[in-house]
Length: 368
Image (cartoon, rainbow, N blue to C red; front, side, top):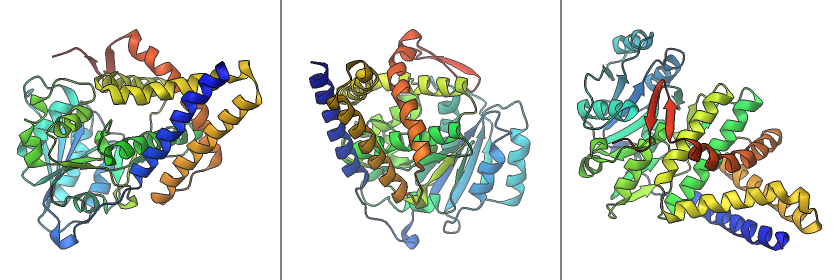
């Protein structure tokens, strides 16, 4: 009986992954450089003195048509040297602007409030966001903006992470795997998730949904904005896989920070619909079967477990190749074992407490 149940769940998991890959590889029309819309980049930073210099340096190297780009750094009331570092770039590049939020907009708190304040002083047609612990490629902004053909409301991009150790590489594979799933579903017309460190949207559509202040509170504000735009049912939302729009993020430095990050994402995922919960449930059931398979050892369970590793590798390897990256097998193996326990632990992490601690602030999912 176990073999049959394991086979059914894993078969659906395999089919899902193939469907996700089809969506991930979907191509989209692009604008020429001479047709690029004006763009505003918003970066929220709170006590990022250890990361923000790399971020601002990469932003200063961006290629974009003259007088069509502004870069707004929102210092979210930092108490370290963040503003001092920002000031260096204000003096050397007139595309940079900065603001320190003096008020909360509506119910907004933390990062969502910082981004909303940045958008208020911005002026351009397309809004791009990334994080202060990220570095962007010099072609990032113009590549993302080039996908804003007629009726496109949001464009998302991929993020990897630095891979200077097994712990960092494990997180990077996790990012690319999850974003591959997010891109696949989004490009097939059913967005399930996104990440705010490589995200963009049209200003007029942002205003149409009422901005962050008109969206119910969430610990994952980028996902809520995505679903608000999707709810309009009249715009295209796309997730092209393009190495020229890649963003590189600093990984979590330790297990505790990684736990807090995953818990925040998991609690944010509670706002998903039945399809999102279905995808998560299928992943949980398949990985639970994988963990239990040694207790029901047989040729069938070995075959299913082996096929699961092969399909996951195939999925991740194609994503890496499309992003001009190399998937090292030792990193993939570490990721696979980590992913089994992470997927199984996440529901319990979320159910133990609705509170989220992130960037020195505490939030409750039910806050208003």
